[in-house]
Length: 297
Image (cartoon, rainbow, N blue to C red; front, side, top):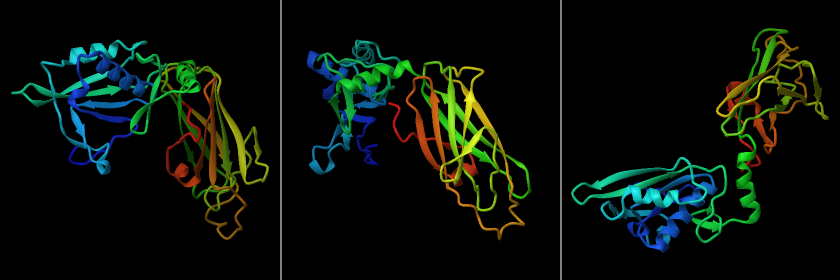
């Protein structure tokens, strides 16, 4: 990382050996740094790498500045981190030996995103902001605390479409994964799919759908109403459609006016909806992740 000049960022922070000391001030800083990662999107703290002091190279790792293990043990660092209230689950400390003779290490601390907010010893809540920590606003604290109250869903979509045959069936497939800790009792997906899939295969009307206002796409919904979506579980929803234009014989036929995007909206209980607009080409090629245009967090 030093050789390649990997810069600090929202999920990476370098600390020199002097950041670890058995004083109240240093303990407060450790707690603030670790809790800020947990309150944000998680990340990695590396104790034992000094940053450059040059303004032009600020936030870049300059050299190893290892920690003497006899002075600061992994167990001591873990105790400080575990004193954060509420306790942060899933923190992992990796000691990386620098010199066996001198008993020096770097401590690589992996901090997961937490499902609630953690207050530092200064009675404030902190988050990662660019290269540093910043005090959280009230609404940000409330948002973090609400992480545990709703499911967290990832979505992927693909269209299996006919290529050569006339009057045949295709399938729109959506895969949903619950990567949070809260059960999703009700899940629904709304889609807008182009009338014209790839230039001359036109989708005829599927059941329980309607056309977009401008007539360039079909709008329909997929439900998961029978089985709830458990944490770490997934479900695949499918919607069939038929085509009414042959891709070989009708190449000279004028194409219908059609959008070139697939618009996806995913709803799950109290979770903020996931909404994304995807180009049709990657969706026709295979599984395409639905990257939320408005962050759930």
